[in-house]
Amino acid sequence: MFDSLLPRIIAGDMQALARAISLVEHNAPGYFDWLKKLPHKTKNIIGITGPPGSGKSTLVDALIGQFIQAKKKTAVLCIDPSSPFHQGALLGDRVRMKNWYTHPDVYIRSLASKGSLGGLHPAMLEITDVVKLAPFDNIIIETVGVGQNEVEIAALADTTIVVLVPESGDAMQALKSGLLEIAQIFVVNKCDRPGADEFAKNLRVSMMPGFLRHHAPVPVIQTNALSLEGLPALMQAIRDREEKTGTHSFKTKLLARKAWYLIQQYRMQDLTLDILEKEINQVPADTFNLYRFIESYIPLEKK
Image 1 (tube, rainbow, N blue to C red):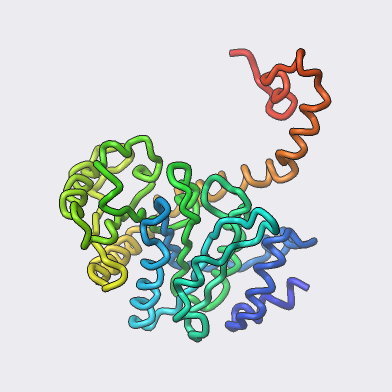
Image 2: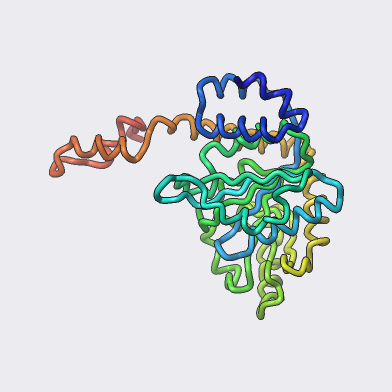
């Protein structure tokens, strides 16, 4: 089943790609053995993250247009909130990208977050590796927009873009957010709004070398995704970042983050909240101790 899909995906068969994604997404029998056989493919993976309402989907729509003008084939993986009824994606992002549905050089796939706090589908890394087999030049991953915990994208993307708006407030007030630590490019979107210049200026000062984990200035690009203002500057920043991802040290760090992400996912795949609730219900409430309970899952040693 899987083996017949591989040559078709490499040849650009989008139906075969969609089928493979679905099989991997639902952990179909044999999917892991198939993943181990996949040939190595290098693609530019761009992560778009940020709080809800920052205009991520509109910005992705504009980026697709820029890549198409540059003759670059692009795949987009949109992580949408899960429906509380059927757990599927709500498809909100695809509404904003309707101009590209049938374009031969664009592939858009919506995936449900399935309650993941990191803003990604639980099998996002595996799905991304499947998409890398197809003849795309770039893969854009747009996270669901959950806010401060949305940092798992840093383990998948070669370039992580954090999208903010002028109303995000003083940059220093956002220090608690892990988003500031993972950003390799900042976008201040909706730059026609009052306070955009001042917010961008404060962000540039805050992101100078030595701040958090940053060893070099982090680009801060002001954009208006609707009018395409600032898009050429953003494209240049992406190209500059793409050149840096070719270094051996960066690739090693990225692979280590990917391995860490996968190991965590597979260790936890047989453990759900429902299972924990059933186990807790079997313990008398007046004797329950949280730390004794988790010890059976994560052995704790006295230091």
